[in-house]
Picture: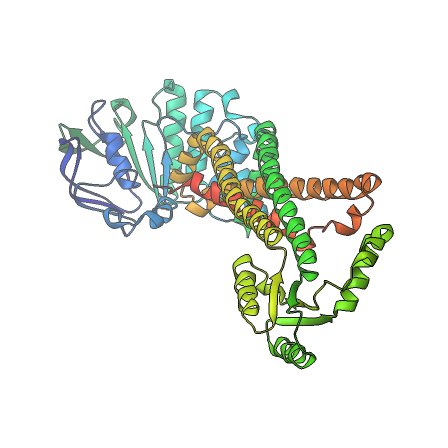
Length: 220
Length: 294
């Protein structure tokens, strides 16, 4: 589903990622870890084409990402749900509208949008907050909205960048359980985190990123 | 279609949310278009007055005193055959005196002191309207004055030249002013839409990351720009109609002939104002939104 072959990325001549190769299979849930600033976010950005590789090839859901034209990028991103480190919720829209936005982009019928968003809100147990604006929600609730927005259009790949960054342990556990549920429905999930506790004992594959390259692969 | 409806809803919300800046922009566009359309209306009226005056424009060809009737007829035949001349009127020496007596009115008795009729016989020629340009008329007058039996050719050379210059100045002014105002409208709308675009920068970034196409992102801004142009155009058209009606009705109290002399802008001119406003604002919005890069 996600395939990196000898991928490199440089900023101002300095290598951030160098000759990275790995594959994430369809339906897999995997982690990418490493200290802050090692290039985890850059690696995810390469997958959803917010950054372009300086070398190598990236294949995501059949798309050769490095060769995509500007006009085609939105169609790749519709196949890739993203849970951002900084949430990127729109504070002038309600919880319902934040999630519905992803479906409006997909040109879905209003009635279908309403039904789908309501179902998703029930899944993440926030149906009672549909008319609330994000700034009135807790960090954990905001993160669940972000996951709901990323998943509502049923992408084939879900990327999460430090999804529990500012959350307490209990909330983090809930969020991770949401990712497992999503993965159980067949979505390929790749989570970037520096928090070892998130993948310890999960039995999932972990890619250790260090000093521009993948240092090792292990089972968490 | 659903994208268009959503874009319309987003644009309407933004128009309401940013109502003051939108109102100012609409008024600026409206005033700009009103200045332009008022100037065009003045030009239209001056041009129409010129055309009316041109209808009565004549050239007087004075004949030699000793010209025979046969020679006069020969000249008349030449004038009638000339495709540039659309009217030929012969005025005999006797008719000329009668005209002069009528003009002098009470003072006509001074003519009784004369031993003989000093006035020459003449032809009044009317030229085609499209030839009424100073240099063309001058050339024609010179050509006629060279004919055998012609003493002198007279026409309102200075008037023709002055009115023609006035018309040219107004038309050129209208074109320059028009271009300047249309560019200003593009710039005004560009600025407003650019401000809205920057204010929603974070939202646009999120939309891009969620997979929104360029059309999905641009459309609300283009609709908002279009609204500004149409609203400004409508304000300008209504104001122009109001001003024209007021001058036409109130001005008639001071100068009764004004209603008959004034030319109202045609309906298509009002439509052109709205279309120009819409087109220029849409252009400004399009430039403001620019190239969206992912």
